[in-house]
Image 1 (tube, helix red, strand yellow):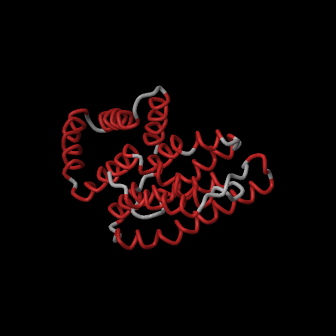
Image 2 (image 1 turned 90 degrees about the vertical axis):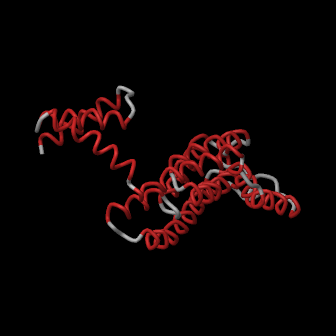
Image 3 (image 1 turned 135 degrees about the vertical axis):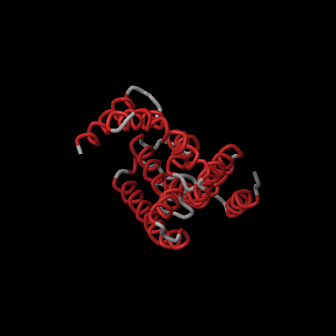
Length: 226
């Protein structure tokens, strides 16, 4: 128990010194094993653990999700997704924030990562919200909250890892995440709308887009390929 607490504290200290988290965990783990058992055991476990992790078939899906998120971000599909959502919701009070939330849900359904969703939407949606007078607190909170949908809306990297660790059917986990993900999206959107009604200056109303603009943006979002 004491060794575990010391290890956690050491990981936090090394991480706060701006050492990458993976290296921090590796160094502290090796030091802990060497201290408790023997450093020869730690040197023997290191290559075995790395080879097992690399050759673990089930985890091969994780880099594929990360690759898909990067492809969508670099090709501009994420921006098209935001533009299409804004064409339908931009005229509503808080429409840009609502569009950001919908775009976060759509991006999460492809990349499966909360971090990638938050990072991408901060580049795509945050400048637009600040440009049209949205408060900084609402803009940042919308992106941060929308990023959490990445762990719920399937496919999700977290659900894949959870299914592997618990020997649970990953398909069943994906199905179970649909309703909570949709419910979270609707509740976030309702919260944004209530905030915009309470403080209109924090979320100005945008211009209404024509149906031709809406359909064009939607078609561009659906038909664009990486």
